[in-house]
Length: 428
Image 1 (cartoon, rainbow, N blue to C red):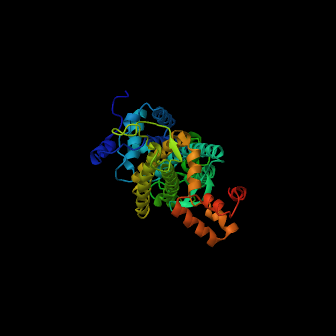
Image 2 (image 1 turned 180 degrees about the horizontal axis):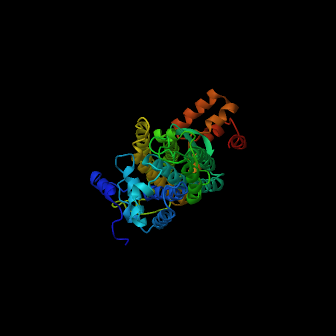
Image 3 (image 1 turned 90 degrees about the horizontal axis):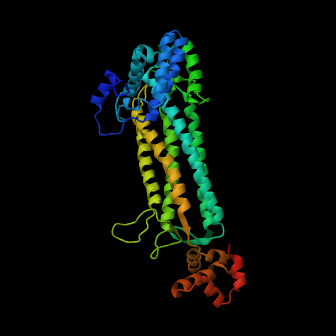
């Protein structure tokens, strides 16, 4: 039974119309549509639009699909036209064939693609984003643990890629953790809009063909079935049919998270440059051979991966914004591109966060001796010396140190401007 084709003519037309060498629409999206069909089966029975037996059979079919038994029946490509009608009909046809009912008259009763699919994407988005936030919190905790571990590791702080002032490796790590905390808050704020659905608005948001009893029941059922108690209808259902910018806000927040992580990854790559011809303040434990031609080479492969995740996410964020801008009149017709891009984004970022924590941050090897060496050889102490010795005097000291190759400490002590004890007191 599982091997026979359960989808019908509308799905077959989509296969012919959209023959792209492109991944299928995400199962998470399909499953969220099925959750809505299950809730609608209860609501439509209470509204008198389907019989008790039809409702029972539709619910049973939905449960079987949600168990994963029929994943192979969902075959529409992620790239397709029609505002996602092909995905909605793919679900309608599979449920209908399993339940022995009509895909439109019973499975799709009181619904339209235009209220089902945006609502399904929000449900899928909530579930995926909550998982992402858990892994983001894990990454933050891993970074904070390294911050505590490295709180006494003195090193050179840099601006413009040039020597600036002294700092600690622990302070740098704590800064990263607090940056990610702000990113987490932005994502949480964006997710609030996902609990407001346009389900029940049908075609353009004015609830044509959706009885009042259905509207009153479908949300109560969906809350239980989806396990998301905060779900509720938008005050203006048409606003959710016409605009897709709720998806833009979440994608933008996730994009900013990835931007920050990519910046951190680039910082770590800079600090790990070497091992002999670069900065070498940190290194990474070897994850794989770094080169097919250069023996012993260790590359910062996880950091490079995080950079590339940002490139991927940034492109999908741009796609989502363009697709939302093309929500013409009463319908966001480009929802397939939004759904494919957003779900892809959330999944790869979710995996990347755990990867960065376990195979990136945890695998950093700190070279405390090298950190202190570069700090002492730098001009970073100049700023700390200025209040004591004066800007002009310190400027001369810096120039002499650069010209002679001596450290600032050496020049100051040789000129007897400060004692060793006085010099150390000025340092952090």
